[in-house]
Image (cartoon, rainbow, N blue to C red; front, side, top):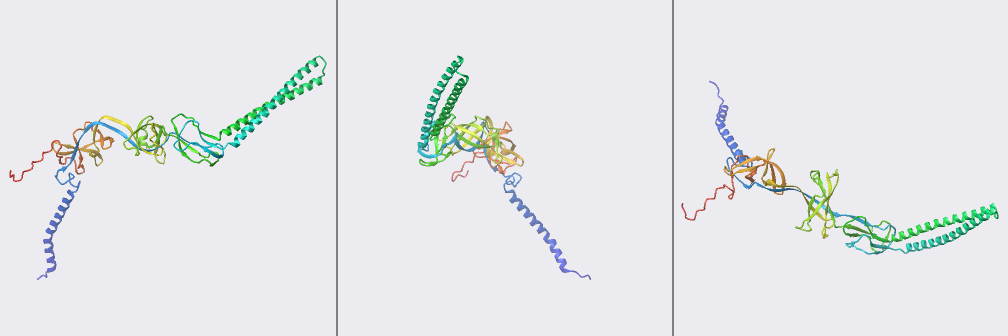
Length: 416
């Protein structure tokens, strides 16, 4: 009689009985995971619970105006700026203007001590007087020598004077004539010295002068006070031009090639809420900086009332394109599905979402232009499209065209 291993036999019987339970448990776990995943957004075949409709919001496709507007930030600077400095050193005797004062061309703004320079002028005038007296004396001597020479020549022709006496007369005339020319040169030299002294005296009177035309200039800053000792080229005042004023903005290469001179620009400032200042593009830099990849653009604003000041922060808006009959949808309707950009159209009749690939043009705020397809019409889905795929059933808003009217509420006690 063969020996039977009861332990091995019992384990084999138990394995055959347990296998169906293991299979059932595995199937139940798979079903449970599928139910959880299908209820996640985008988890099921149609983005929501299998076969369930998705509540959405819709908006009509419009045809109207849309603008391509570039928005930039910048800073205001004066149209022109320069500092007033003395050409000579000295003590600042008086300062006639202060910060904010309006200036006229050539206005006297400061005075240096000028006693020394006045004395130099007096000395130069005296030296010039002496030179003029010397010139008169030299001229008289020259005239007398010339007469003596003419008389000697006449007497020599008659044989009364010898050749030696004639040569002496010629020599005397040459000497006095040379002296006359020297005194004339001295006169010119003294006149130049006098003009130099007067010019240096004028340097003690410091004026605000500029060559270019333009609006009013103002004192922007004062760097010293009366009584200060100044060396040459020490800044005293800064002078700025505010009417017009310049706004400096920086643009990237995307917008650089769309910039044009005389392009209208609308500017706003946080200091003046609700107010808009109009300007125009005045200068465009011919290069983009390597560090920032941006180009400098200067916008000129008339600033007739002087409200805008240098150093203020401004926002600038430039209109590049204006289309009057564009196909426009809300930007909230735009979606990406894989490599495609598009939107979901609401099929009102069948209450389904239809994906439509689209090419987007101008984007202005919360509105976007649809370039392709050109004849887009109907309604687009603006809310809930993250749960949608092509053909997903949708629940339309109560006020949407074609939406089912809500059932009337039953009155209490009404059993109908």
